[in-house]
Amino acid sequence: MSTSPVPPRRIQTDRLVLRPTLVSDAERAFEIQTEWEVGRMLSMALYPPDRQEIEQWFADHRREWLAGEAYRFAVELDGRMIGIVDVDEIADGEGSLGYWFDRAAWGRGYAFEAAHAVMRFAFEEVGLAGLRSGHADDNPASGRVLIKLGFSSLDTVACHSRSRRQTIIQRRYILAKSPQR
Image 1 (cartoon, one colour):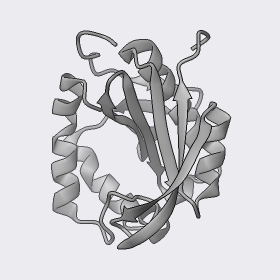
Image 2: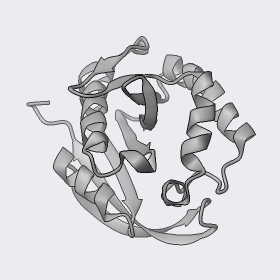
Image 3: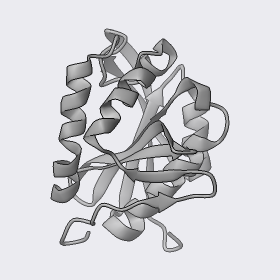
């Protein structure tokens, strides 16, 4: 693992720009999370979303980045934020890959494209040795993204979903850095 935090930087993919999140992104994130189909897939977020909680979360992103605790990227298409991809819960050379997108962006390959770029960033620039991820059992599209990224199924567990205010089934995955990555 790197001994100093990775400086905030942009990543360009074929169709997207990924940049470190800004406090000003909180309003757009609030808009995206007001869509029930998005919000219900976020196990740690409230639904309906709480604007002040989202603003506080975004206000802490730069500190997390500089401390090497989390790397959160706003995903932009044609200059408009359409989602977030991040690696957080970083400890012992591993982190958790997460992503969520505006409902209008679903089904177009953006999650795979952005998550692949952030996965490479986590392995090549941050120096992580492994990643974890997961999705709600009723979100098989997210599972397909993870499998396409090379993740392997780990297990299925019950966990609390803040957005749904109930226990859900979550499928969890792992990915170790390979010599080719």
